[in-house]
Length: 68
Image 1 (tube, rainbow, N blue to C red):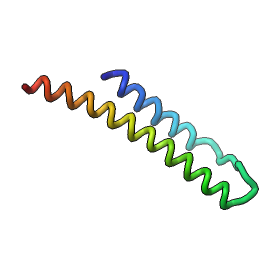
Image 2: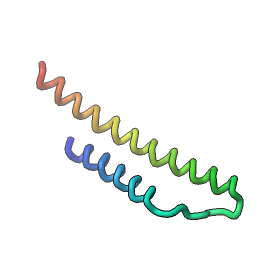
Image 3: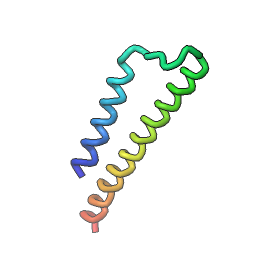
Image 4: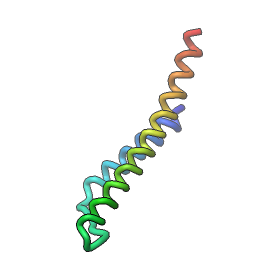
């Protein structure tokens, strides 16, 4: 269970550190640059959501087992 929560906090920290960095331009086109940045954000938070679901599931299993 600790490993699952550690992964959540490490990933959230990586997102935070990445957001502190100045924006890097990947294309000369503003539209392409905007779209790529949004796709990266979608990926980052999708991974965070998956990690959170895994951590919460293991936590709830432990709580439910201890209550029964």
